[in-house]
Length: 154
Image 1: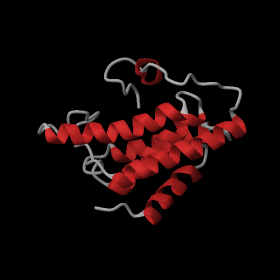
Image 2: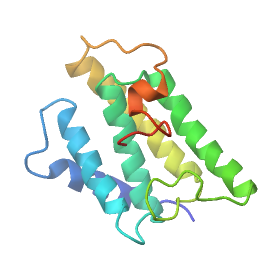
Image 3: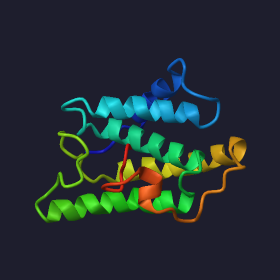
Image 4: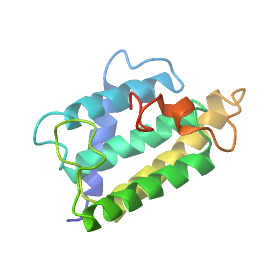
């Protein structure tokens, strides 16, 4: 099922417009991401591809803007996460990477496209307001996301 780009933009704009959205640089993006992350954790919402695309956009934006990971690494993670979903489905375990009791959304090229757009937009914002932070080309996943499955609190 294709993603509705107009709806994705609306979800992102609504999340970014919430009052008290962190600092004027990357903090506002993190708060918006957390809002959409919470929305996706509601039972039944994890399969909403528009919501997934908006959340993946804001996650990539936030991680690159803060300098937690480099744009190169985030691009690899966006594409690699989708590839992992395909592999898990082929193995008959589509929920192998679930972080909640909800099912994992299916792999989707439009969700990947939105994630990659988040990388680009996060990189521009990083250069505008957070350029003093220099991420390594590649950071260990445990350092970026916390110990465990490589996804930590995200």
